[in-house]
Length: 287
Image 1: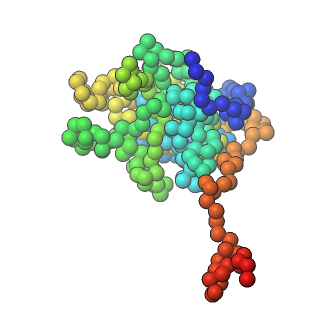
Image 2 (image 1 turned 90 degrees about the vertical axis):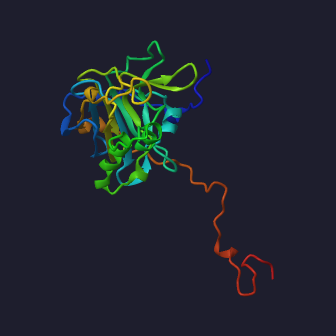
Image 3 (image 1 turned 30 degrees about the horizontal axis):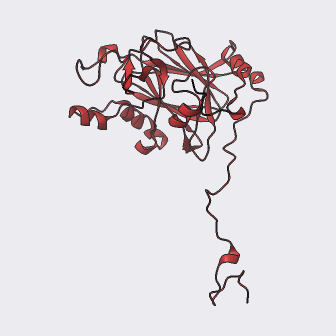
């Protein structure tokens, strides 16, 4: 099998550090709430804190967006994360930000489904292959309008924070089981999570997070095509918990720096000496 295309020390993770954070029994719970079915909510996670998503009642897929809370132009980059990490992420994988920032927004510290691996159909969990469901595709495929797709849920969730539909981006499908079939086409399977399963990440920066509880619930019922019907009976809430770890566990940690590249993509900015005077000559022209 060919090796991973992207390799290098910059991708190394201090596993003992993140393992200590995950195992910290003295962490302080600073926020907790539930995202009801077919809805979305946005919240802040301070840097150096942990955020846990929990399937409190039963299997449920959640669509997650992340932004730098101080500058939402920097946001989660699903495609690059898929290349640098994996198509389905788990413990110690990092969630990377867009250009020109390109740094870890978060690092996954705990995942009760990390041993799920690949099932008989090639399905894996915590998906970066697909993206959020949206009312535009729904209208295209069914001719009907529906306002509670994940895209719409996220749009409503971030509006109080001054963000718009244009800020909503490709997601991490938490708890979702997906893969590619023999025709290299995307498939979705029933979510394998059970009550109490969780997915946890460490905020490397001050984050604005938004989560949609997918209207497809656990995805055991097709949303389109043969057998499709309203799957509201397989929808469940997702719990959100934010923790502050003990300060001594953060010794030596610091916020990741943005990408070191400071070039101009081959462009050259004009300098004062390049500006022509009244004769049409520049300061650098021989007289």
